[in-house]
Length: 249
Length: 105
Image (cartoon, rainbow over all chains, first blue to last red):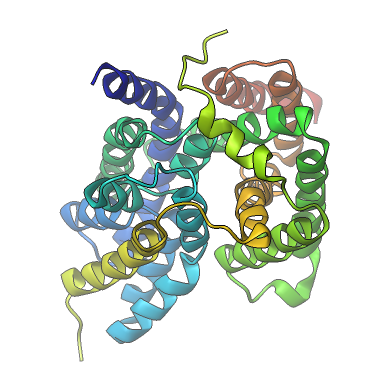
């Protein structure tokens, strides 16, 4: 059980920068929630259950529009569809014997960032690592939203601006070390950067939500990479044989 | 017709929950198909790269601050700095750039 405790502690440690970034983003999300007529408790509840920046932003615009519930379901499905891909990818990192309860809880906790740090782990994924990250990141996200509703524009713009890149710093920390050792992944990352930049500049894609763009690019680029450079059996099963160890250097 | 905010929140939460949980609970064990295996191997890297760029440039108030944060982050990651350190470095780069910008622009 010591390993679980260790994984939980590591999860909390890696969750700290996520929690900081979340707080700032959730705070600004709270400002939108207030416009949609949510009180702080409703904002907290929404963020605790839904915890998705683009998804919640869309959620609040649906509430603002007083649209039918079915539209809410559809909008959330589209804006959050990338979590479906992330959930598929995570299923391959689990020990096949992982209990359903763990699958449900880890699934519930999938966000861009928590997904990001969990795929950065070596070996089979220990659910307790995710629980550690969730334990610090989700309350921060929820409280940030509630506080944003209460306090509005209290945080100075320079602080919000600086904190807004924390999340991207973490993504870089995950993709760059692998790109360094695996040239194909490196090429895939550069291609993704360029394609994403191009899509952001082409007017044709303007009507598409960010989440939709992310899903579309992911399916196309990962699909091409898989067709052109199939991963060898040993290559992607290798991490599973490495015992989980501390990544202190 | 007016709608109940709690029902809105619950609808959104239910859809999000199903999207997140279904693949994890339905896909048990290793997928054998080499294409799907390879696809899922590449998915995380593509998703994270696509989410990072160009969003890191548009997130701060000054785009140049975001570009510098990206470059600093990549160099630090290449050199093996840990995740927390890289996140903090990126924040610091943006904060310093934006604090210094009025003196240069």
